[in-house]
Image 1 (cartoon, rainbow, N blue to C red):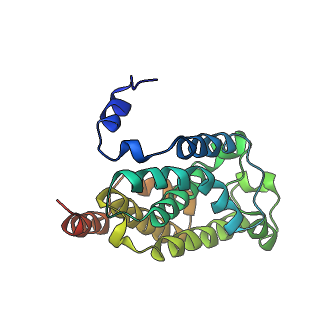
Image 2 (spheres, one colour):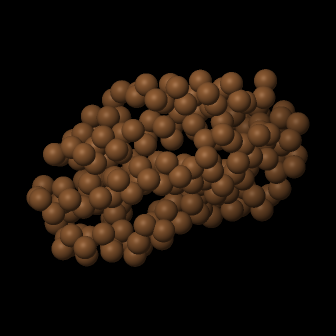
Length: 198
């Protein structure tokens, strides 16, 4: 009945913490459980909605604790960023039974689930299209109310996805991109920091 972890102790001391109701926490737990054995998604919207089952409740809690952030924008960035991370760890995702690309994209490129793990011209084309779509999703998010770290994450992941989509080997380029922070992410963080209340 009381906070024991240092993080929850710090949150419990926050003035807005009492306003976060138990149903908000239960929604986050249900969203986390939904990530365990996800069904393949028919299209991009369904895939991102699957991730949003976890990130939308968490974003609502975050927005309840910190003024000036937009729960919808936070949830969208988190969901799309998760899609990018699942794509970057493609082999691990497939081994764990998760399909990180939507079925309609695989059908367009005449790929079966098993084909996705093997390098081929079709795999490259599908990954390029998917990474362009991810970059487009991140471009559509208004960064003004994301907060400093989320704005930096969105900018970094948008740059990584765009660069990898243009590469001859999108998967290798994407994984290489996670090893460095693009300048535009630093710029986005600086701008978001200037806009945030002190």
